[in-house]
Image 1 (cartoon, helix red, strand yellow):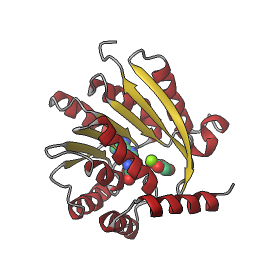
Image 2 (cartoon, rainbow, N blue to C red):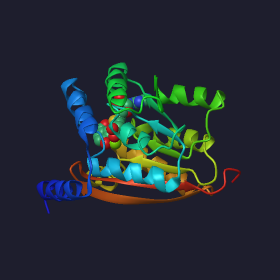
Image 3 (spheres, protein in one colour):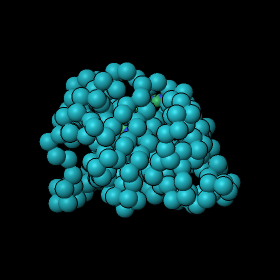
Length: 224
Ligand code: SAH
Ligand code: DHB
Ligand code: MG
């Protein structure tokens, strides 16, 4: 098994089952042209997020980590009329590229990008009374995963779905526990393990983005 084979199998499935359309492909092209790192979710993963939004019947979504808006567009497209997605991004250049991509994809009426450190934006959203959210996608600086989980919980209701990207990182979560990103994942897992409000699992993935994984949690009862 090789990364080339994972990529080929991803291409087979996305080709056969449908993935990027012109607006999503253009979003990736413009992000690359603007020098953004190629660290978005894959097409197959983007579609999984889209399906999860629909399975959850989500009308309100929180995203932490916008980059060029690729995952944002996949999720926003699954929202019903009147649905809202707020996405948090620290880098103004990323946010500018994302805003243009989101407008071209036709979902700007549903999406708000907040520029700033997510750890600063989240308490502001909370104090504004925003939420509760039906789904949260956490995909920013990995050492802050547990902080973002805390805020996602404050913005949640029983049934809220919380998805966290990049939890396996090529196996570094167990092979390099001193790595700050691996520590961020392990702190997140410890927090979930000790929290009676959450049921969770983590699924390892291979594909166009290499070997990584998603963690998914469902909120049982926010009163604990
Ligand atoms: N969700 C995107 C990928 C996000 S990459 C997709 O799949 O398409 C991670 C993003 O988090 C980067 O754009 C990075 O600038 C942003 N980020 C890093 N630290 C952050 C912080 N403290 N607050 C908010 N965003 C942050
Ligand atoms: C990185 C971040 C991501 O969200 C991702 O999917 C892959 C890599 C990173 O910071 O290296
Ligand atoms: Mg990611």
